[in-house]
Image 1 (tube, rainbow, N blue to C red):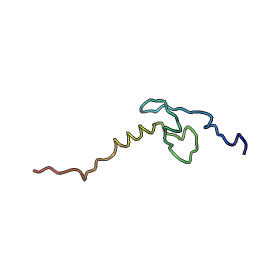
Image 2 (cartoon, one colour):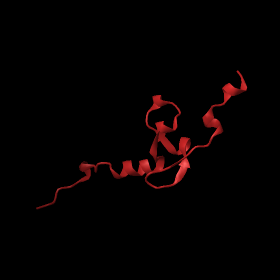
Image 3 (tube, one colour):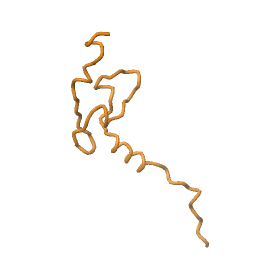
Image 4 (cartoon, rainbow, N blue to C red):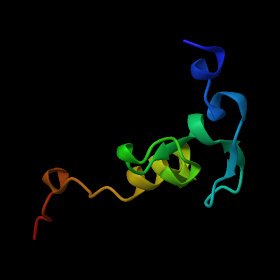
Length: 74
């Protein structure tokens, strides 16, 4: 195994991307989810929304548990 085979381009370059929700510049590989696993390590295979913003969006859009509701006493 040669020296060239041990490293890929992603190991040598630190890629940054700006989140479309919070507008912060973050590390592409650590702070963004991949959209599809089979697309490889291309920058286009990562989402444009960071992990923190994605978690906030999912929690805010969850349905309310209707089993906790109570009907009024009329």
